[in-house]
Image 1 (cartoon, one colour):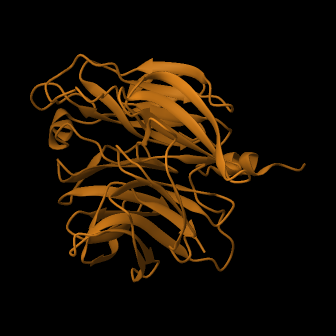
Image 2 (cartoon, rainbow, N blue to C red; image 1 turned 30 degrees about the horizontal axis):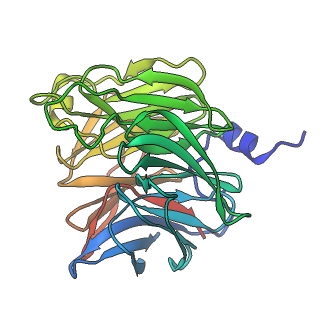
Amino acid sequence: MAIDRRTFLTLAGLSALAPWVRAQGQQRIWLGSAHGLDDGYYLAALNSDGQLRYRTPLPGRAHGFAVDSVQPRAWVFARRPGQWAGLFNPADGQLQQQLTPPEQRIFVGHGCWQGDECWIPLGHAQTSAVHLAKWSATADDWVEDLPLPGIGAHQIVAHPSGGAALAVGGLGNGVRQGDTHFSSALLLLDERGGVRAELPSPGPGFSVRHLDVDADWVYVGLQYYGPGRTDLPLVYRVSWHQPSWQALTAEPWHWLQMNNYIASVVAYPGGVSVSSPKGHHLLHWRNGQPVAAEPMRDIAMLAEADGDLWAANGLGQWRTRTTQGGGVQAQGQLNLAWDNHGDVAWL
């Protein structure tokens, strides 16, 4: 029986985020954005041996990526309130095109590919109202702008069977620390970008910010903007088919350690890992085992590929370890302050 690529990925247990189905002989590279000692901002990549492959200057501070799983192309997005996105080939890191948002829109640092289109969440420049814009590679232009519920769009992640999950942080320009009176939600989108499910955040003061998916679950990292430091859960999973909040099991001190802030969420077969630069720790859930805490200062950037987890921090340090809980396999340091989100490509 012939199967399409999405079905193959689902059956293989691979995330729709996994860039380029790996073929024999291909090498893996880690992608990230960073701040240099010269005060410049860069797109950077490491080879599988940890050597710096390239360091490409960027117009400003970047945040996240959208790496195409079929074609050798990827977007890097400016941090909110972003005014640019750069299209590049992950093999050499050279920017091929620079995109500006539609009028009265801002980039919020994220996007995901859906076939020939890149779905890019945007904010209204004045109100932070959520919009889902679609950019067509064939047309080389914006082709649709869908208004969605809420304010403060953030990370979007494609689902293997079509559609996407979108974090709506609820954070407009007026929200300040200690304010719990804002509305945050997880949106599950259908294959056309319409809302098929909307889940308000699990409690007041919690902002839905960062995500990853597999075939069955959406994994959600929260940030807490209420008073003090919370010992309530900051990481949940939501069933793709029957959406409801399910907190990942951890002790209250684990949540206190994360200091109200989950930066990156990475799901992989058998587990999930999250980072907190404010808590200087990673948390790992693996194969049903109790959560494990791993210290690493100013840690935000995470990516996973082929059973290896890559972590890089604001001090320029990076390390890889197996997702099955083994020790550090490799580590190093560069004169780059790594930012929030990493990704992977196969060359």
